[in-house]
Length: 148
Image (cartoon, rainbow, N blue to C red):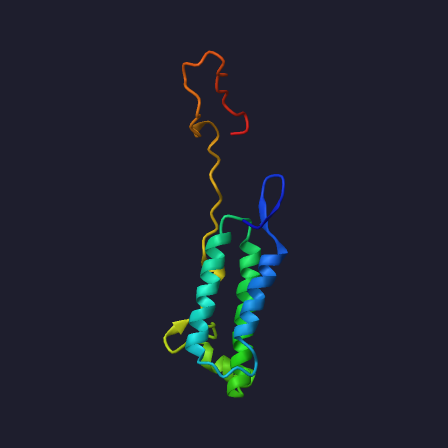
């Protein structure tokens, strides 16, 4: 995995973030006349794969930032494509209470990367099986870790 190393945590490196943003930029080119539903499905595939790969890192802030980036790219692309103003976009994608609805096109809804639960690998310490036989004379005794 492409993680920056920290003493006790693994952060996502800058290069994978830059690469996924380049893929999103390529799909949401301002002058693109592709079908919005097809583009949203492809963006969702890219984001789901990327997020599932990196969800074991310290990445909540990165996922929130990526979510914001993708939302702005898609809305800017649609505003240019349909010649919408900000007012038109808000009217289309907010409910009667003023809350934003998810971006959808042709039955495809934009995936929110920050909705994925970030799970850390569990510390297994002494529960990791040893490859050496238990009755071997030079085998050291297992000591419980004081860190737990």
